[in-house]
Length: 382
Image (cartoon, rainbow, N blue to C red; front, side, top):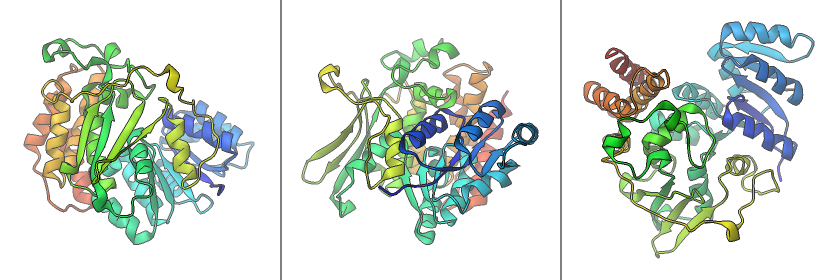
């Protein structure tokens, strides 16, 4: 197995911490670590893994970290410039992008343009600018290997597929979140604490809320379109409450390949780092004799309108997906601050999509403009 060296963008979040567990288990060198402002944890990580570069995006946090690491040889940088430096660092051949939101787009592009392997855990990059990103991957000879459990499952099921024309459809599985099966009326009274109780996965607050609204699955639908360059009619979603089948690929001969595993993100993280090889690692094994019965149901976009809005944006294309994502990020932020209700998230996203026109074949600046316009459309209604 090739021993890859890592630059980890977003090291203090859930994916970042689990990436470091995998790196430790595989004895992979970590060249750079970045975070927003989690100084204490970032210092601990820097002292343990000894990177050459550590970045705090927040300027004051970076100043604090610089003092804390003054007795080491670690360079400390700040701001987006530091993040871009970490993404293109010559000493790392693999960049794990675990930054949350559209903030991950520019560093991902920087890593692509440096010819890196990108272990992609930032779905917003593909949602907002997937066509542009894939064009840059081809231009610079970079690689994208997905970290999301669903897209990793598809990636694994596509190994050995010589012609995408053999693929009839990709089937994304969704846990359904904590509220699947409830009525729309019941969801009006959902609290923040209830929305943060995911039945199967331990994740950050934003993605946990997205899972509760099913927006996360809509974003993954768009990501699959861009990552695998397939039209929306070749992608479908099924609700699989047990989160054991992580996604499937149906082929033209009616064969269906599925990837199964425990609900443990360390497995797809590790595969993104070791592909095309496999190695023993820290992920929890799956015991088939202890598995519950596996069930599959159709999603309910009427009760969960965020999913319907995401599918609408997928069909519209252009900057519609950036508007969807920006509005959702802003609305989820308001919900996490208890300023709006759970079902208001979808209402705010729908309003922004109606107010901000979609631009066909956008460039990077038009994508960022659409994102900002969508956020403004949500915030001005407060």
